[in-house]
Each structure stands twice: as structure tokens, then as C-alpha cells.
Image (cartoon, rainbow, N blue to C red):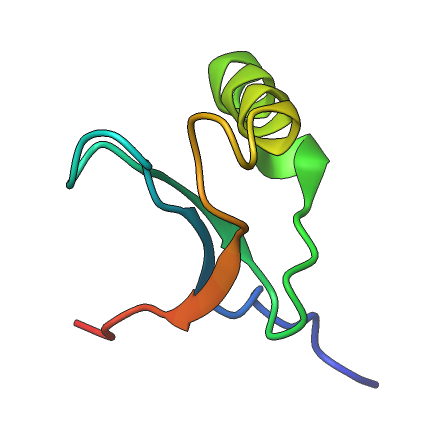
Length: 71
């Protein structure tokens, strides 16, 4: 019998850096390939993600996948 696995903590973030204000970017938990589990995001985070996607090149740089520090 196998035991259910506890989900691994997100070790990666999809980062959208602001083009106008340093430190005002957006970050979303993702996997190593940058895939986001949308069902795990709050409504606000989902809306922010979709806004960032359409604002790439105007308000945000293209997203990058970055590792998160493990505590």
C-alpha cells in the first residue's frame, strides 16, 4: 500500500520584473518549467498573472523562472 505524498513546496517562481519601478514586479509559484497551478492561486493572484502576461513589453519584462530560497 502506498502512502499519499505531501505536495512538495514550490521551489520555483515565475517572475515578471517591472520595467518602470524596481521591486514592483510580480511572482507566482510554478514548477521548474514555469507552469503554474492556477487552481492553487487566489482570484487576485490569477488576475495579476493574466494582467502581467498581457503587459509584457509595456509594464513588465518577459517572465523568468527563478528558484526560491528554502527556509
